[in-house]
Length: 254
Image 1 (cartoon, helix red, strand yellow):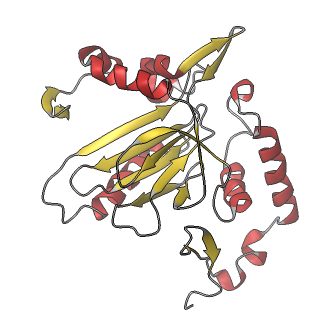
Image 2 (cartoon, rainbow, N blue to C red; image 1 turned 180 degrees about the horizontal axis):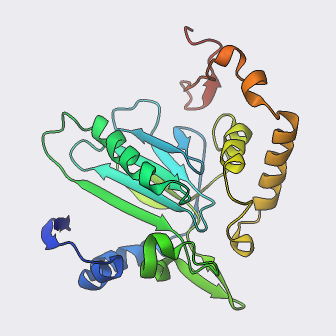
């Protein structure tokens, strides 16, 4: 099965590592990304994607210019972009339901690209490292050596988070202080459905413990959030204001 790499038609390799060995520029691009300094991304124009979330938009979006996610250890951040119209999808996968996530990613980007006259799909995969339980390896196999560092005989990922500029298609290392509306509620959703608090405790970022503590306190305060936070089973709605910041919509019709 063929695919396009740097505009050239090539045979699809049997493994990801074979692709890297056959096309050194892919590995070089990974090294360049790994060598970047981490940029702090502000809330203006940002749509932050938490674990098990997906976001898709296009350069025509007047409110969102950056998609981003971080805190990926054994998780993977996937960016899928249509080169014709710039439609971009970013998702933070944890391996809980990959078979369902992949078709969802494809259908979401397709819905934004139905009228594109030309172009191809580009995929960017960031995340994972050589963790002791080998959870990352199940997703990207030997490619993980590109995002792995060793310190005192313990392994850590080099890149924890990335952002993608919807207008320019630039992808860069990033971290985020503002993670959008209802952060604790969204984190509680992922935590409540997860197998454990962490798949790689030694490799988590410094703020991980406080993040888990606040999420557990939220679950304790709202054991049945569907009754308290979603009265009448109505969704919580937010929009970006003229300053590029999230603000809550009081009612769906406002």
